[in-house]
Image (cartoon, rainbow, N blue to C red; front, side, top):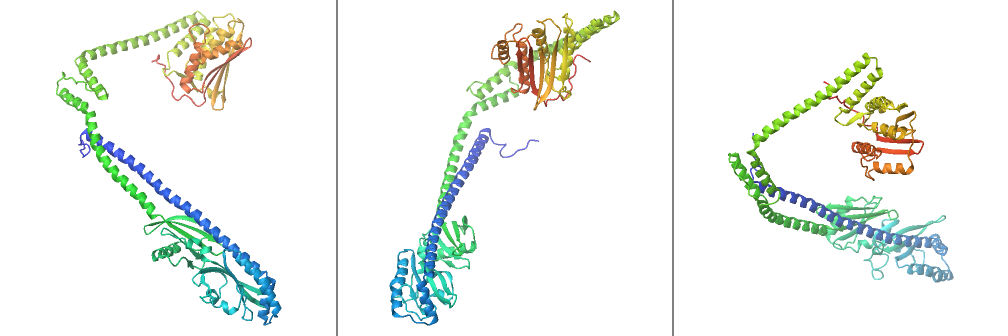
Length: 605
């Protein structure tokens, strides 16, 4: 029962239009999807590359500040004069005036010069363990001065971040500057802790990314203990976003990273680089939401334009298809008249395309319908005549076989066994020539034919010609084109052995070489000169025309051509010879083409 649906009920021109539009739409959708996906990925990858380079530059600045602070701290720790002053203060000893003056004019000035010459440093200060010391600004201070600092109140050491310089009054130092410093206790084996070194830099100097932020770029530093440092002058939205990112990325991240994330609709590229020296991670993020939205806006505009273009194309394609199918509808109308029995209808030619050809073909068909009965009768007569000829050929073949059998029996009665054997061989040759319509035989069958051929050929000559066969048993079932080896044996006898007129032998050798079967047919006859063998090879390879005539190589060429047609150009026939010594024909065929079906002899019933 015919199934009806919406699409099957449409006219052919509408179906064509729908199929074409859907094909175009799918193609454009796939191309647009790939294009805009690649464009989006390009924006993301560009941002990742930018953030990765920027983070590395920031880390380089951090490492430079760290090195400056560490070098300054080590220099101060190695100052013997300073250590003597701190030990004296720790022990409660007072230094004489000359020692103090000399200390200020030499050692302190050298330390001050070290700090002043390093533009990265904010200050390097030494705080004594008590107040029993004369302060020498800007290097040496009393212990009470240190207690004004935030990190001293918390009794912290090591790296400290985000504190203000409250050691002095706001009239002397700017307490609005946020600092990062390395706090190092000074110890003596006798007096214990005799002082503290504070080497500091401005947070803007060590972490420029924290203060160079824009509306789309921000950064913060998170320590291993969870403290977060950033520019507190940023708006609340940026601060909230940084806190959300800090929760997503642990400060214990030990490897650098650059990620693309979606945070509540905001598309961010986040990069982080961990500093083992500071025990914290610098995280920067780049808001590319506007860039991604531009890609999406372009995509939506493209989709809208494509929809309008497809609607316009639908009308244009429908009009074109109708024009193209006009001849088809004319043919359809004419065929309906023919179906009703009007055989005089003819289709006028309006185009020269396939539809026009179809119309011409239908006209030709209608012209021939009136003669159909007579043509059917003629075909039946021809078919019966063909059957009669085929039967006659079969009768002729059996007649020849029966006559040969009769001759064989008469020779055996007269004890003419040579004639009987020759008749048997001739019968086998005839049977071999009239069977195997496929054109392929096994090597075993070809060798049996050659043995019958040799039995008959020896009747012609006064000298015997022997046949030597040395072929691996596994090669006997391989397929080769029929009459492939016999022409080689015949060529060896006619052109190699017959001119000498003496007893000789034709050798057939077969073996496996790699994945090929190689069969050699050779004789020790008169051979050929280098010029003759070169010409023969060219004739076999069709480089020279092999015209009819004895010794022109056309038989060998046919063997080579049939092998190439059967197995491919990598197989075929090769000839080798040396004058007065030998001639060798080599056939190369695949070693995996064993015969799968046994051909039947059509001459037998």
